Image (cartoon, rainbow, N blue to C red; front, side, top):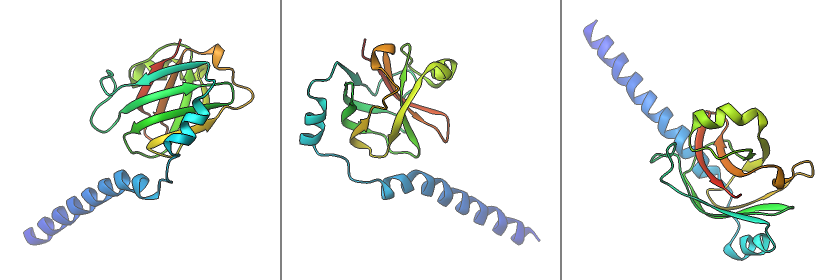
Length: 156
């Protein structure tokens, strides 16, 4: 009986570890190739605003961070840099600067979801017609599945 319990615990631990590793690595394995620097630069030309994503924000940690330059225009938002890999990232424009999950949750209902972020190195997201970046001050990358703050940058 004792052997059976030990086997159950050890197999359960290995299964749990494998599942956790799978959740973390699957987005990396299935992520499409990000746009090259030339494409991001073309998209960033004529941008109305720019900001920087930094790794040292209050809500960032070794698994949730962004590092690079974001350009916000009327038609696109483009990012040159890297994001920590993860599932179900969304790009939001928020009415005020936030640095962690709790701050973003407090204003999420007043924020505008721009679109999906499917790559972890460079991205270009089309700006929906019903969103005016002049109505907001901050860009936020958020993991929708786990309600996890990834990064943010104030652009005005």
